[in-house]
Amino acid sequence: MGNIKNLAGQTAIYGVSSILGRLLNYLLVPLYSRVFLPDEAAVYVEMYAYVAFLIVLLTYGMETAFFRFNEKNGKNSPVFSTILTGILFSSVIFVTAAICLSGPISDLLRYPNNPEYIIYFALIIGLDAFTSIPFAKLRAENRSVRFATIKLINIGVNIGLNLFLLLFVPYAYNNLSWGPDAFGMINSGEPIIGHIFVANLAASAIVFLLLTPDFLKIRFRFDRKLWVKMFRYAFPLLILGLAGVANEMVVDRVLIKYLLPENIAAYQLGIYGMVFKIAIAMTIFTQAFRYAAEPFFFAIEKEKNSKIVYADVMKYFIILMTFMFLSIMLYMDIVKYFLGKEYYSGLKIVPILLYSHIFLGIFYNLSIWYKLSGQTRFGAYISILGTIISITLNIILIPRIGYVGSAWANFVCYAVMMVVSYFLGQKYYHVQYDMLKIFIYMGLSAALWYISVLFAKYVLPDQPNMQMAFNTLLLFIFIVVIFSSEPRLMLRLKSIGKNKGEE
Image (cartoon, rainbow, N blue to C red; front, side, top):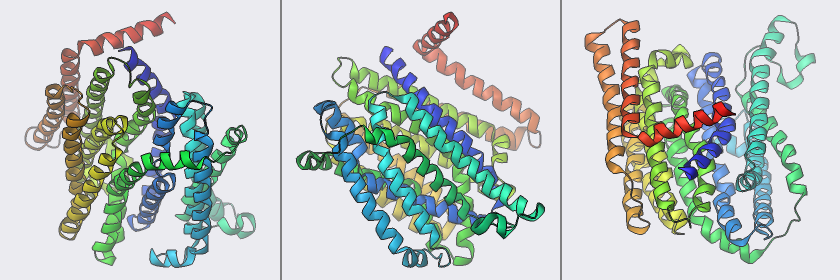
């Protein structure tokens, strides 16, 4: 429990930047869904899907390689400078090529009048890929406060500029007579989708400046032999990462755009992408957990009880994920106001997406077996399998049921990846997970939500207040079951509360 407490503490600090930061960014989704129609929002949804994919490509698994080789080679080795030099070189090549080809690329993406989108995103991707390694170094050194501070500054600048460009600039242009002379190229009487990208670029540039002191402290050395070793270790993780991002953010968005008739494709993509944001609560927690868990898992690998810790971490992770699933679904009548009314038609896919993210989170948790055993190729194989399933199901389902087909493709894809990873892990790096309780907690969360749906339909129709009270009772039942079956969890929470009280 001591190890888990340390992991929880690190997760909490990283969560300040990840969870709180994403929650602040959450405020932008209601803004986007109210100032942009689904057809316009589709541009935002699609472009950020490509960003996620390309950042993984440009970091090519070197974050995890850094943890692995930094732990093995020691702090005085050239691991950090070698990785940083390599990524700087590849990022400069990428940015230069993207800027030179911005016109043809924008034509290919059906944005012929906006080649500037390509330039914005090339710079964003290059900066974010390069700064990912200094961020990894901060994590390895347990400098979570500096990590969180810089991340929050990034988020604050991004949100501030979004509010300025999307709300204040149009207001000033229309009501304060601040026209072209005052705003130059950024004037408009209406919000412009491209200003979201401008805000992001400015925030990424500021992060680069804040991390500059970390660059200046090192002597840039490139150890070719070391880089080859790290790349061989990281390459399967690159395939894993690309397949993972393709499954989560790219395949469905691209296929919705190109498999549906052009007159409805952008509208459906906009709805799907914005409704998908509701499931981001799962992604937020998973991301914060991964930031803390990856170096933590490597650090305790040699301890006698490490596999017991891994099993406990999995169980508590699932408890939190299923609790979040219930909290969102039981209070959907409130959660739906997160989006503009134009997007309500897509709420039917939320439970599918939420459980898909539970499966994905479990898969990430299970990934310790191939990372710790050095068999990272299996992670790549599993993710490629997931990508094949995702592409196949999207191609079959999208023409028939639109974006709902993409939601089900996500669900099946992550379920298969989770199951395959579990059985392979039991063969190559056995961890005794408490499968009975895991099945009980997941089944209970799904059953309680289904009971809520039945009561809303047959027992308490058109009685929102009574339904809300009943849903609160269901959530309380889930909490009671958890603490009844996990006495150590209750004792730990009491211990934490007592320690804080004494402080």
